[in-house]
Amino acid sequence: MQNSLSTYRQGVFWLLALMLLLAPLFRAGNLPLPLLMLELLSLGILVLMLMRPSELLQLGTAHLVMLGGILILPVLMLIPMPVGLWQQLPGREAFAEIYKAIGMGSEQGWRTATLAPNNTEAALWALLPPLLVFAATISLPRKDLLKLIYVALGMAVFQSVLSLMQYGGGISSLYIANEFGIKAAAGTYLNRDHLAGLLEMLFPVVLALLAATVGQHRLGSAQASWRKRLGFLATARGHQASIYAVIGILAILCLVFTRSRAGIALTMLGLLLVLIVFARRLGGSNVYGTYGTTIAVIVVLTVEIGLAPILDRFSMDPVEDSRWSIYATSVQGAMEYFPVGAGVGAYPEIYPHFQPASIDAFVNHAHNDYLEWIFDAGVLAFILILAGLGMYAIGWRRLWIKGRWRTFRYAQAGAGIGVFLLILHSFVDFNLHKPANAIYFAFLLAVFLKENTEEMELEERSGRKTRTRRMQVPAVSVPAIRRPRNDLSLDDW
Image 1 (cartoon, rainbow, N blue to C red):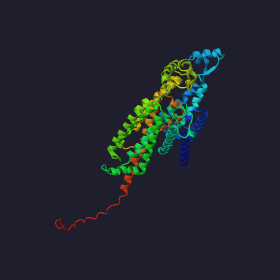
Image 2: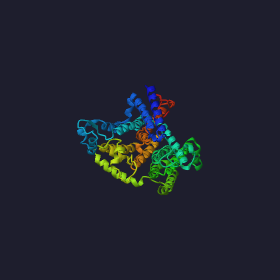
Image 3: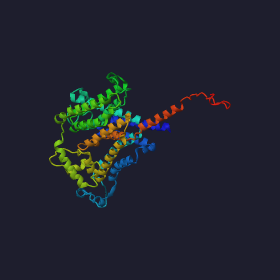
Image 4: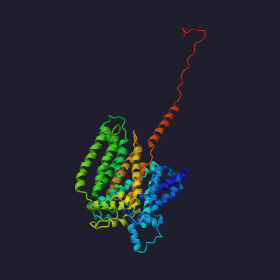
């Protein structure tokens, strides 16, 4: 039984590692062949999970209901219904006239609720990778998740270095064509805003691990000399902290050079949230004491001040002028098809009916994930969005405990901040419609929501060791006290 569980976890671990490595490498999985590869890997995870259904119990009822609701939504829209019933759905009148004009107006036929069945079926398959990544991540132990976090950080380093080379005019053989020109910092992504989405999810995790490395190192005395404090940097943990610091700097530099307005603004917000969550945990009895909190505040505020003029002068938004028109007409379409929606994944096919003449380009997304989901799936999508946000908020209440944190809890808090930044970014872009970013979002959300009893387990283990030591204390021999003889009085003694 134990060998079977170990084999299952190893298989899931390596499939997840492959997905995290491969998802961003080929246009963020936004081409047919890379997306097919990700879907096949997710099916491999599904097979392993079906072989051990007991592992699904770690998801919890709320998680299973959420995953089931997301998955069943496109399935419901693909179920055929009588044409008479279909015509009663909101927004179908114009299409009924079109079908009648081309000879498809028979009252005896069957039609699906979605107006773009092929798109809905493709969307159903595209949902499998992020949903199964979430389920599989929840089922793995903490030590495996930390390894996968290191894999994700390795991808962040790769994308950052490649992007800085692209922007600076480095090795020409590493240029990858994108929609903004050969020198745009977009990494392997077609759109630099989506690269910014990936990095803004990951850089709070890097800073969280940096805070964990520094914050958990304790000195024997609060009055230790600064020479002893700085000696921490020469230790193995000091080297580890230096690596995290370099990765964080690379990620922030790359976010700046993407020239993504939302990316830079959310970087500033992320730094502020990291400061709020972790600054106090750099004080107390750790290596830098109160100075650690003060230094963290100074560093973050300095970076914030430096990024402010960059946000105004250096960033740019190529669709800023047309975005509000897209929002307004998308709301118009969403209201016309509400509460059923046009069909999951139907937006690129249906939105041209509402697109204003002032926009002379093909609009394949609403540049607002939530608005596009409501356009596609109506009231059910709205309910799932609210439920997901509620689950995220409850996750913070479960995560936040008093006392000393262990490394994985730091990583969870960093993942929670990264998830929050992409939640905000999705109001002005379509990051979650890109397979790579959806996979990373699902992975970090699962890390954030995973039940963590590490501190409790350590306390119980420490208590057991204390009890064991007490039982093993050798008995001390006590010399016997002579009792007085009956023929002597107490005065004689």
